[in-house]
Structures are given as structure tokens and as C-alpha cells.
Length: 461
Image (cartoon, rainbow, N blue to C red; front, side, top):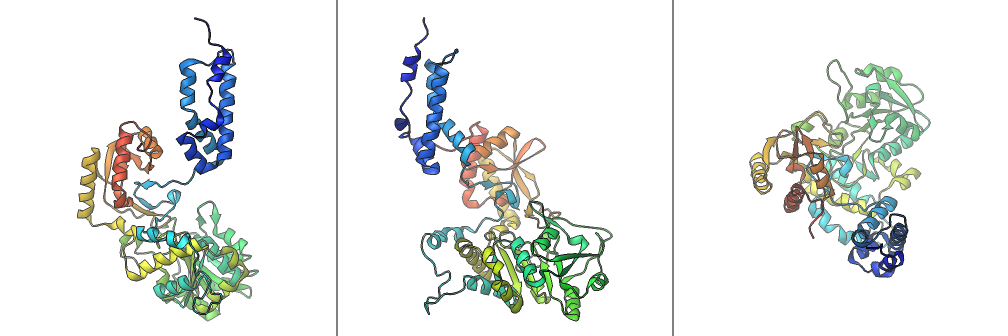
């Protein structure tokens, strides 16, 4: 039988406009726009025309299969060129503050009420009673003060920004004394010395890597000293022959020398937490009670809110931070304020937060594990969970997780599903820790695991 003519095969290629009416391409147009989808469809058709006219030719069933898979190739081209949209992920790693997965999830009740505050106008900077312009920080600032016992509070876009603002206000062009053992590196190679330099402050290191005494600070104080800074080393721990100066002693020195004391708490722990893994972590309320002039922390870590930098302390330096020109560049938008205010009110009311699932009642957690294990054919094994996000890195939370025979292929199928599921491998088994999975997501988790075990990677039809 002779070869099918090139012209006949090319006539089988559909028109661009007809392809754009297919459901898969309509969906892509809603994500990337019709024009970009059209461009990629044309590129795919041009590639097929070229292959039809090549020496090897392209015809019959082979051409038909390529036409069927054209929407998938267009989607892949668009993902490479523009990037895929954010996707909701089920975190079954047992690491609650998983930086790669967006750190703390908002409480479901908070998330459910956010749309009503985002798809309309808000009294963000309007005093409804007087009709005059207000302060966007007024609600969150008062809530932070009420929760920590500080005189005032201020919110910026992240904790690094909070520290830069504080140092720019208190120490631009002057010296800041810091223990050498606290010159930590924050995620993304952003180091404390870099933050001081960005704020225009001059770093003065005191002590040694493992031991810093109060006398070291005192000897370093001079005419150009502007502040004493203490940084909580949240990402690491030193043990053994170590010594450091606590906030109360540093505050006492600051009072004697007439210098402000600043503490970067890091993780946004508002008040002491009962969990043993957080027993040694200083809270913002404890730092305020110790007399620290300013303390700062993150909103999206132990606080359990959106990304934000929290500043609490004495009214006068907080107000100076608010009035500084840099504050306008660092202030959060209304979405962050709406989410943060709602989370702070849950703290004020003593309501449960997603973080609390790490220390769920063992009997209730075991019942949940048994229920899910029976549905996916898993074992229940001992497994540690972690707070994550740089908090309590050496303090595992003992417990149990689900275990299934698994390898990298199963991990990939789970990540490729809808919704994606992220677990981890240990000794040739896939482990899924339910402590970081919302109970409301249980059905989706079970369905996703079943599809992945059967060899499927996609979501339900």
C-alpha cells in the first residue's frame, strides 16, 4: 500500500478556532488567556505540519494520537513559559510550618470568612464614625498589645522587614551590639549582619560563638552605641559549654546605660505555649514583661496567620516605627490585615488553631489513623512530627503515622494528583502523617492515595 499523501494528512489538522472550543483548551484560556493559548496551539499545529512533510512522515493512527494529546502538550508549553498557578496541597509530612508549602495554614473559619472582606471595600483606613482617614494598623496593633501586654503593636510585611525598620529607626549610622553566637542566617541566605547593613546600622560583635556574658556587652558600649540586640537562634541550637545573656539581664544593662533593647523572637509566639517542644522559646508577652523596648516576630509561624512582621513594645519607639518613611514600603495590604486580625481574635478568644493538631489527643488521633488505614490498606507506625519553620528544630513530637510500601514513583504520583499530596519515604515505605492534614481533607486524602496506589497520577474526572 502506498504512502498517504502529505496534503491529505495536513487536511486532517483541525482549525485553530475549532480547537479553542474544546473544554480542555477553554479551561487553559481561563488560566492563561485566550491569546497565549492560541499562540501555543498554532505552534503545535505547525510542528505537526512539519512532521507530516518530513522524510519519515506522520500519518494515520500516530497523527490521531498526537491530535488527541495536543491539549496536554499546550498545557505543558504554557506551564514552562508562564508557570503553573498555585495549587492547594495536602501536607502529610508531619512538618507543620513547612516553608516550601507556605508555612502555617489559616484556620478554616478564618479562611471561610475572608472572601467577604476581599471582594468588597473595607474600612481599612477610614473612621466610619467621623468619616475621616484612619490608621490601617489600629485594629491589629491594639490586638497585639492586648495579647502580649505591650504598650503598642505594629504590623509590617514580614519579620525581616520588622527588624530592618526597627534598626533604621533606632540605629541608622550608629552601632548595634549583638552576641557573636546570635548572628544567624535566616532562610534564603539572609543573614543578621545583612539586615543591619540594610538598615544602615553598624554591627558590633561581642563574646564568642558559644559563650557571651553580660560583661561582653558592657565593654562594647561606647558613644556610638545605639541599641542592644538579641536574636533568638530559632534555626539551630548550641549545647554543651555554652552561655548567653537572657532578656531581663540585657534590659537591666540597657536601663543603666540609657540604651534600648531589641529582641528578635522570630516565630511569632504571642504567649507561653504548654507544649514541651516550645518550653524554652521566649514569647512576645514574656519579652514585653521583661521590659524589652521592642520585640519582633513572624505572623505566619507559631502565630498561625498570614505572612507578616509583628512589632510590640513601648509606645514611643513603636510610634517612631510607624512614622518612619520605611514603614510605608513595608506595610501589609488589606488581605494580610484582614487575615491577621481574624487570627489574632481567635487567639484572644482562646479558640483552637491548626497548630494544636500536632498535640492532638492520642486516643482520638489513633482512632483517626485506624479509620484511614483501613481505607487505604496502610500500617500504623511510630513517627515523629515537627513544628518546623525554624521553631524547635531539635525537638521531635512523638506519635504515629500511616505507612505504605512506596518509592519515588509513588511520591511523584501523589504530587501529580489533584489535590497533590506530599508525604515522605522512610526505609522503603511511604509515610503519611495525619497531624498536618486537616480532618476536613480526609476524604480527599483517601481518594488521592487510592489513585496513586493504582498507578494513576491525575485527579477525579
